[in-house]
Each structure stands twice: as C-alpha cells, then as structure tokens.
Picture 1 (cartoon, rainbow, N blue to C red):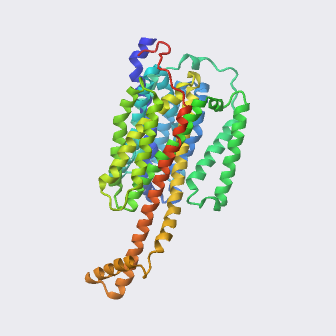
Picture 2 (picture 1 turned 120 degrees about the vertical axis):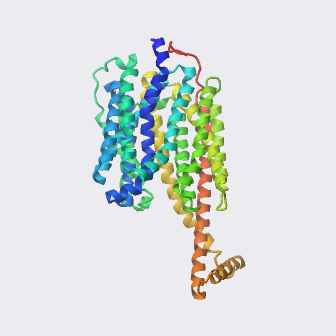
Picture 3 (picture 1 turned 90 degrees about the vertical axis):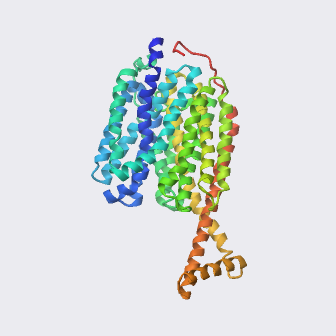
Length: 518
C-alpha cells in the first residue's frame, strides 16, 4: 500500500486541488461582475449583493458539518457528489433567467462548495507523512492564494469580453476532470470504511447550525446598510444568532452523535490555533477590501490598476509558500507564525502612513510585505493547529478551522465598512472646523483657487461657488484618507494582539507515523 501511496501522492494532491481552486475562485470571481448582473437581471444594488451573500451563508452552514457528512456517506462518495453538484449548480447559475433563480442556484453552489476545501485539506494531511505536512499545506496554500489573485482578473476579463454567465460556465470542464480524477485516485481510509453503528441524524444540531450561521452571515452582511442596532431587522437576526448559537453549543455537547464535534476545542492547542486564524481572517479580508477601495475612491485608480497594486502581494505569497513548507520540516512552526504576524502588523502600519500624494509603488510595497507575512502565517498555523488532531477527526477539524477563517473575514469586512463610514464623518466634522474665513491658510488656498478659475474664463460670481465646492471635495478626500489610515492602524494592532496565543500552540513532532512514504 505504501508504494501505491508513494506514486499517487502528487496525483492525489492535483485531484483534491482542482475542486478546491474551483471553489475558491468562485468566491471572488462574481464580485467584479455584479454591475453587469444588475443590468441584465434588472436588480437593485442591495438585491444583487445577495448573489455573494447567499453563497457565503450556504458555505458557512456546510463547513462545520463536513466531517460528519464524510462519515455518513463515505468521504470519496461525498466529495464526488459535492463536485458534481457544484458543477451542475454552476451551469444553472449561468443559465439563470432572473435574480431569484440565480440566488437559489448560488445557495446550492455554496452548499456543495462548502465541503470541498476541508475535505481536500483532510485528504492532504492524511496522504503526506508528518514531516512533509508543511509542504502539503504549502501546496494547498498556493492553490488557495491562486483563487483571490486570478478570480477578480479572470472575472473582469470574461465579463468584459464574453458575458457574466461565462464566469459560471468555466467551472464545467474543471468539474468534469475533477470527478474523473476523484474516481481513479481517491480512496477512503480504513477508519472511514467501517460502517457507523446505528447512525442517528442530529436534527436539532442541523437546524440550529443552519439558523445560527445563516442569521450571523445576514447580520454581518447587512449590518452597515441597515445601520446596525438602529434597525429592528438586524436586532431580530442578532437575537436569533445568539440564542441558536447558545442552543447549538448545548445540544452538540450533550448528544451522542453530534453533527459538529465541539469537544475538539478541549484541545488547547487546537482552540488557540482557531482563534489566531479567526483574527488573521479578520485582518486579511478587511485589508484586501480596503486597499482597492482606497485606490479607487480617493486616488481615482481604475479597477484594473487597483488589481495591479494587489497582484505583487499575491505573487510574494506564492513564491514564499513552498519555501515555508520546506522549512517546516526542520523549524518550529510557531516561530515562523510569530514573524509572519510581525510582518502583517508592519505592512498595516506602513499603510497607516499613506497619503493622497503617494505613487504606485508607495501602495504596492506594503502589500508585498503583507504577502510575505501571510505565507508565513497560513501554512505553519494550519500545520501546527491540525498536528495534534487524530485522523478520524481531521474532517471535523479542517471544517471548523476554515469556518472560523471565513467568519473572521465576514466580521472584518463588516467592521471595516462600518468604521470607514463613522471615521469619515468624524474627521470631516473636525476638518470642517478649520474651514473658516479667519484661517489664513484656508483663505490663501481659497483665493488661489478662485483666481485660477477666473483666469480659465469662469465668471466671478460662479468662481466663488465652484471654488467652495472644490474645497469641500478636498476636505472630504482628506477625511477619507484619515479614516483609512486609522482602520489600517486598528488592523495592525489586531495582528499584534494575537501573538501571546502562540505560546498555547503545541510544537508538532516531525516523527513519521505509519508507512505512508517519504
């Protein structure tokens, strides 16, 4: 068996990477196409965002159930079913006649896609022996980073040159190849082949999981738009979230066959790793949302140019990940995560100093620093967190780990959007206080602007109003820049705050378990 595993190790890797990349790309590919969907499906801005939200909600519900579903149906069969469903849902999304149908098919696609990443990760962690697991996670990380880099660019190109429907159709060939490779190269390990004794479905757990994850995602997505707790809609969903989460924890800890195994959190190293991943998700997703927003709204960059600022950071991550994976075989993963968190914080503090006079490279190089930091966080953190988990619980553990990263991302994006609005108002109010005829600096700028407008042929009576409008525009721009700077500082602090948790992580041993090949 070990020889077969030896030959197939890389084939198994390619097989599980295909559906994982397909799923990751689909999370970001639709963002760029939203305006086009809005036009062709005759939908409002807040309605069309449900195309993204519905996918994330379904994803969040299925993620923690992955281990349980793998045991019930058999992992190979479940993985193949998910790929087939995902590919079929992609076809239906592309053919959707209206917005309601598109949202329904996106829910189906999100539910099928939710299990693809944790199953792929669990299979990789089992296929590679412990001293090579760092490399396995690095390969997986390259695929995971490939999605966010390629997704928006690919989505933009397809939407501009063909139609938004093709961003879904493109999954068909990948899905078909993935199913065929799965049939030939993936096998259920022995512990999964044993028939589960008198398996009862934990219906309460299932219901509470859907209620809690679904309502939490709605609160995070719609919070800023509805003005948070000033809206009865958000208050109602927040109450549902808190009550169903509390009930879910109680049910899952008291039932014999829980749908999610919360007892895993008794393992202190696993709990600490998940908490760090939650905060990393928070910092990563919020910063990746804020940088293009800063460049497009304040600096006048096009979507393509903003993407070009982001791309070198992704390339830095891609180059660093295999090196980190190799280093993990000999080095302590916790120390690598420590340096990664320091680099993440440093990049945010550099961005905090950015102003509206910056050139292209001023914005690009802190993103590259962040790219190096992320490679040093993701691979070792995953390896160290999952190192102390038994094989039979690996599906459960990878599901929870990915769920916490996603929820961290949702919380980060919601919080960044809210802080941006609040800080902009705050800074605008404080800057406007200086806009007064008694301020000599303001007087000088204002009269300079007015004279410039008059010399360009603008009537004197009109020049006054135009100059005032331009000055107000400048105030708003400066307030926006200050707001972004403050949020980058907050994200930098988040990276630093979680450093003490590294002491709770266990150092994984690099001894080889079983004869699974080198």
